[in-house]
Each structure stands twice: as structure tokens, then as C-alpha cells.
Amino acid sequence: MSFLATTTVSVLRGETTDSFGDPVDADTVVASGVPASLLETRSTARRPVEGRTDNVRSYNLRVRTNLALQRDDRIRDERTGVTYTVDELVTPVNPAGHAATRVVLRKVT
Figure 1: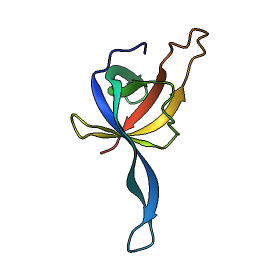
Figure 2: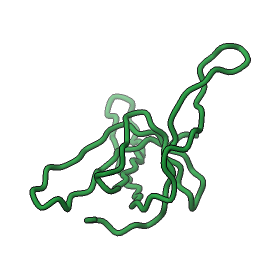
Figure 3: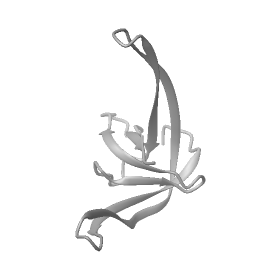
């Protein structure tokens, strides 16, 4: 592991339909108690045409490489209960095998 775990997370996957036939997330737990590092970063984006500056929050997760994550999985922080959606998975190549998978997340509200 090449990260310091700050929380534990659960991986949620699956989809079902509601009473109207619309697709909704099924919170089927694929893995739980997974040690992870979850960090929020903030930056600003300036829009010159509109004359304003937006605050942008991004979330990065680091987990072991042997965790089978997929794009569009959901991650639930077990400490806070907040749910995130997986947008991107980045697993760097490391010949020593010590690299962690970096996951770009989007907060679900």
C-alpha cells in the first residue's frame, strides 16, 4: 500500500427499476470495510465572459490495486455516510507492485 488510509469505504454496484419502470441505483454491497484514502481538493475556475469565478471541488480516492472497481460504481464513505460515483480509474504501472489505484470521484447529492 502506498497511501495512508483515512477512512473505510463500501463499494456499491447494480441497478434496478422503480415502480414507474425507471432505472434506479441498487445499493448492492460488493465490498465493505475497504481501507482507503479520501481527499477533497478545491480549485477555482474563472469565467471571463461572465465575469465570475467558480469554486470547483474534486474528490480523489486511493485504494489497493486488487480491489475490482468499475466505472459508475458507487463508493460510500463508512465514516461519514456520503456516497460518491466513480468517474475515472487510474492504476499506474509499478514494477515493484506498490502502486495504489487512484479513483476520481463525483459527490452524489
